[in-house]
Image (cartoon, rainbow, N blue to C red; front, side, top):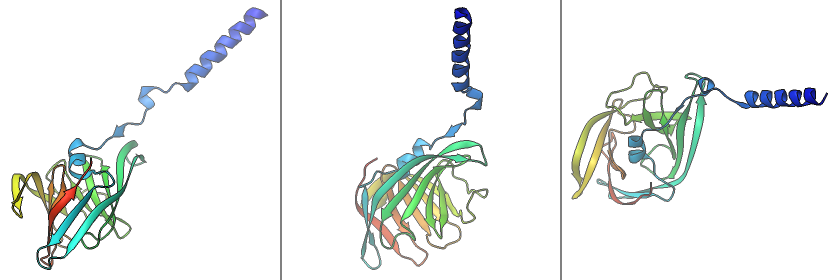
Length: 201
């Protein structure tokens, strides 16, 4: 009788161990953000940038107020994707005070949120215009990479220039590695230049 009890106990423990194990084949894959996209776009709360309008000489300050990192399960691709939702304060530079840096199906992208969703998506991992995006308004393409470019007598390194194809809210955006946006040109001719900043990554 004692032997049977010991045997049943061993069987019970084995069943528990096997039931608690998850085979690697059943694990959901995770797609993380590229380091390049994080170097250009991901800044910690407290980071700020001051811009000046070339035409009106007015100022606008962009300040990161919050960053929420999460792994989101995608039913379409059956995997987890990394997403950073970024909240910020500003007046006239952008059409909303929220954006997201997310790992897409193929590469990482930065999205400006407006009208209840992502309105502009900027892909940092390859210089082609995406037509198979989740957003019908994906209209920003990488047009040029600069090893060095100068604005207001300041030289910036590793700068990517993006162009809007529908000419709606932004015409050109210049983005510097480990700094962020250094110049933003709007369709009405307004040009906002970076004049001061303090960032944390």
